[in-house]
Length: 393
Image 1 (cartoon, helix red, strand yellow):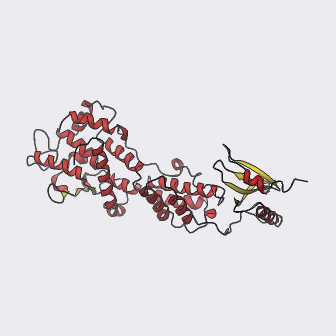
Image 2 (spheres, helix red, strand yellow; image 1 turned 30 degrees about the vertical axis):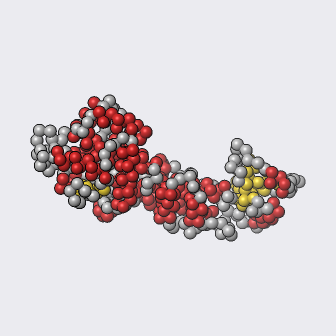
Image 3 (cartoon, helix red, strand yellow; image 1 turned 90 degrees about the vertical axis):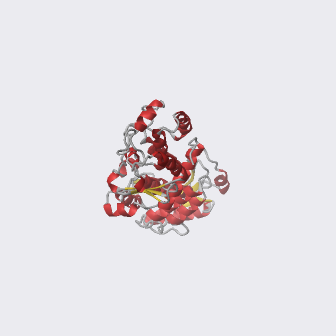
């Protein structure tokens, strides 16, 4: 006969966390699972159709030893009657996915308010159909279906963020005994989702920006220096900046608010809007004094009828000692890294980089999407650049 009811409540209370999770057995399949973080959960091991299975009963001490034994016996009766403990049914008291997300992320006091709200809004909006479901009834396929809708919509970066954010919620649920697995953890982004196009342009790390500006200051206020600064401040591609025209700026002279880049100049042939920070306007004001009547913001050295050389910024970077380490285009990577680490909304970041869906209807709508957030983000970025040595603004 197997030993039954081996544990005492005192033993359950004294079970301390270890480096690895472990089990304390009571008998007839019932055991107390103790996680490395100290969470204690009643579980029951059993076999059905010749396969080993595990049933989660609930957290200790919320569910006492005596109650866990009662629930163990209920599972055994279910098995005798030919039923399955894994049959979908509501478990009283369990939170929904939406409530679990709120509880977990509102408790993350180690992140910024902006990052916390980005995570919550991402889950609430993109997993809206799953939020009312009890946390233990959300399956891997449920979650994958919703994430694939995001992938199909072209949110190739954001879908990865949402998967990561909700994965942390499922980990939280496991620690509290609300479920036994994390369906998000088994979804591998590199396999499940399309891979965003990578722009293979050399770029420095954000930590190298102060040294970069120190070297840039040695070059004085050459046109290529001002171009480099404006590339950093606007996140545009070099060709878009080089062919920039004064007519594309909106707002009072020397107080412009927007740069509206025509669709014909953009890589994806969609109009792009760039909010202008105070620092960007300051650079443009200097350039306007030097324009000498040219329609181009960066006219060629010997004629105002065409824009400056496409290699002007690249040659500047080579003189500074950054050959193979940084390009004008590389500012897009630096800015994107900074913005993601600072917790800005991935959608706003992607729109500012002009990474919009190929669908022309959606692209037309999205050209001004997240504009208030993008304006705030670019101003915060410009303030950060100024603090690193960009002495403009």
